[in-house]
Length: 218
Image (cartoon, rainbow, N blue to C red; front, top):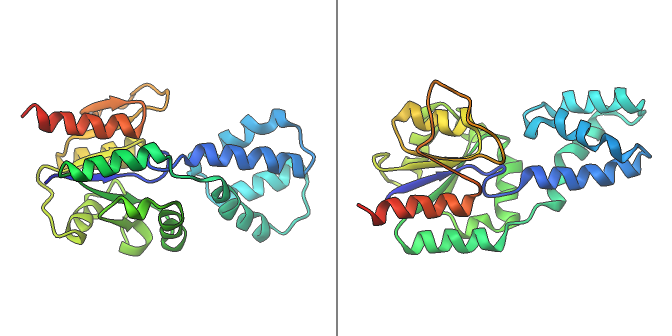
């Protein structure tokens, strides 16, 4: 029963899509042009930009007087109202579990927020467990976080797969451990010459299918 380490943001959950939906409403609320949507999405950088830094950029661009802490809170909670688990992703995880795979979420971020997302969207019903960087004190791509995830479900790392959208955090983490990986390209080209994913797919359902297919051909 091989482990499958799954990223949360833009893998199991469409974090970018939720942020884009929130951004449209936010721009309307502050009477900013919708043409600024791409700017806001770009400076968010798939959530890699600190919420405090992003809040400062927004306040400066639109000359907002709202306290920065209130804007940070909105950035943290607003997009989450648009997050949903795609029922097809849930079905794919259920099929994978029935086929003997053991899915475990491995995600960077704040424990309270990430765990709330996992439970509120129903991801928790389809995975064996999860580990969050803040809780365990180590972040992807550090191999230690994947080892901790394996310990959480009392399994060995041997034979595990890593599935995610981040070249560095997910595929780099897999490479550091010598594990096979599946990269969700999301319309991007692979450019890192230090390592490469075992498979490249367009979405998490295709990724799970690719992992299951490798088992069937053995």
